Length: 607
Image 1: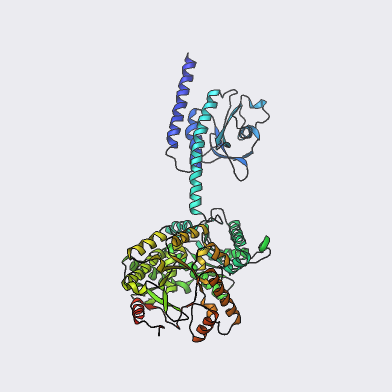
Image 2: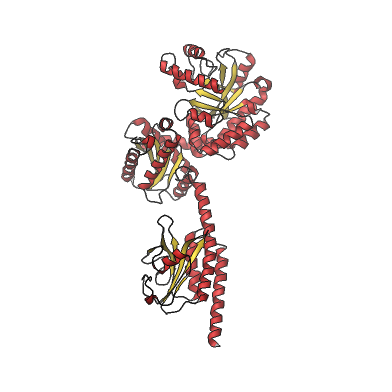
């Protein structure tokens, strides 16, 4: 009777342990390690056993690895002494994993499968952890007493294994969700948002001895068009794998967009320079496979130490400036931020602060200007490109190339775009019928296209100012097409469904290709000024422009030539059949008041 009562008391204790473990699982974080260590140390240990080791299947290697323990294998905290791996089928643990059945051995001395780990014991119980129809791990316990384990222990371990499996599945789903949210869909590297978050975390702790490195591949857009998008993607994946191969697994490595990569490395200045050279040499190794076999790439890199008073966004800007300087210097492709860039950094800091202030207060310093788009045949205004302009309190008019770059690096480009759009739409509402037949091109950043709020913000603004969607064309450059194709296509489709036009800027200069015009619903293209400036003297430029004009006509696209500055250029474009033009030969960009006067004057050609 005494033994029976003791047995019932032990079973009640075990049930309480299981109940406690089940309650704990409900409040766990999504850390797989936390779940397994709690199973070993808080659940199995309290059952009164001598030891326990939790094995988990290594998905990449296909074997079983010790992940948590209590007893002699666990000398301190979450440490496992002499961690071992077992092949599926090896030993009693491996047999359990291979068959998916519990294995109870009363005397290990009589079982040839027994694998000696830390010390010899006489009985062993292994129970599989099942998930989604397959074994993902094993709970294993040994005891010095022969015949120690009973069917009660088997059922108890099965219960713990089932509860653990459910929580592990949930944790893995959450881990996968986070990976999808933080990973670049093509390369598997961190995406821009996740990398910037890591940068901010490290920067908040000081960042001394850690360098940001930005890498941009030379002439990738042209190469991508030449070899095709699929092989272009293979190039990017190859570069991602190469970057991963020379840095520890916990090194933050990201694809920011297109062919621009970033990483954070711990190093002093000399080590940082050595690493930078190593990365560039790695990029330059010959490519393998199909259309890219034997090709060699080159790249430019900028580096900046995270130490200092600048914000994470400012650090990114400094890295970009260093990278641009490396591109222009011809100095072996690497530039590390130094005192030469310090004055630019201070300017960038002030520009970022003041731009944010003006955008938040809706200051009149940020406005829309207009450059007419004119019919080449009749010289009548057919629309305008809306351009962002910012008048700084201290420095006057700031170059758009400078403050737009600051806005993109600091995350303010969304508010900037909305502010300029609102300024333009206010003018269109005021002008009313004078602009009903005109089309206004709004420049859209690649970052805006990737934003969930972009489409709704644009459409709600059109409704607010009573502007017809058909009057607006979103003008995008090739860099917008280097981001997530699926998201870009979805955004473009929603805009076209509502009547908003799409115009491809800088057509013919790089990434943009015939395939681009078939994949996305563009209604117009713009011929880059680089072709226009040589069109009077260059037969090659004329041939390219003629091809674009013919293609546009065949596809029903509006074709606009940019950067027309002379009558000679205008005459050649007219002879080639280009319908629309934009440039100083007609008018420079102008404030809204001047453009309104130009509309009311009825002039066929601006002075």
